[in-house]
Image (cartoon, rainbow, N blue to C red; front, side, top):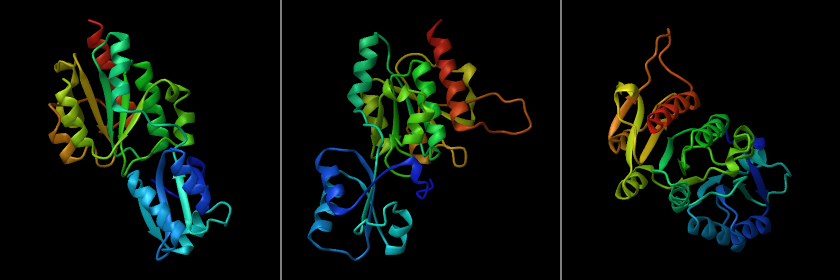
Length: 250
């Protein structure tokens, strides 16, 4: 993910502004702090970041100047989510309200905000009850994600978790089983994709990580007839999500 693309993030600069953002409960995805700076306000900010499990980066003044829009960062810059994240329970409450088995889309390492926005849009249209993303090595709910989702971000819960594999274990205890998208898997048309289900999709480059893949019950592949062997992550999510929809409609 390119951290220099400022239009994708709500940037908060200055010590007081960042402290107030944390104390008001605003979700902060990343915090950049001047390396070596340890005065009182900065220590307070770092303590708040650790309390909220925010990704913390100690960087040079040159790096902060590069990230800054105002050039008055006072040694601290925070990247805040453009939208509030939901809780896992919100997904189950939505499924219960609709009288449906839970259908969740889990994304492992999606770094392109356009992909994430498109996936949230597809999730909403396919009737998924929520999207789960990891805290690290993945894009958060930026303004670009919101715009690309075409409004779906207002209706589909998006949950950010520290550990995707551990979250899958918790969801298994709630009755979910997981299917992972991978070219080496069995054709999605041969799998039973009904019931409480989690669809796991990775990025185009590395796919789903090993630890996450090990938590999956089945590996599903999308039959391809062309000369290349991979789909854009958001397109692959759409194809698999609508196979789940098709099987649910039987």
